[in-house]
Length: 95
Image (cartoon, rainbow, N blue to C red; front, side):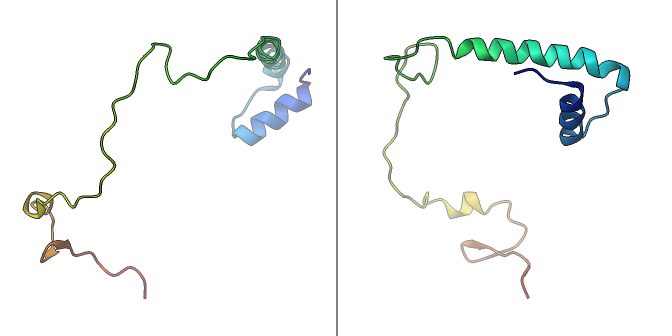
């Protein structure tokens, strides 16, 4: 795939950036180089390669998936500008 001057103008318009006319040819060349590098990645054989979450081998820490209310309403509501009982009071936004 090769980008033309018109493609660069369209990309610039979509990205909402202004590119001077004399810079469009140079930018098209740079973008074509980037696309070339990305196309090279499709040549890499990734069959049998497991997906990774990190480059370092590790197991992520997990906690029990339980629902709790925290049992500390006073701490949670300590900085509330307005409260009613154990709840925040907010202004009405829908009429």
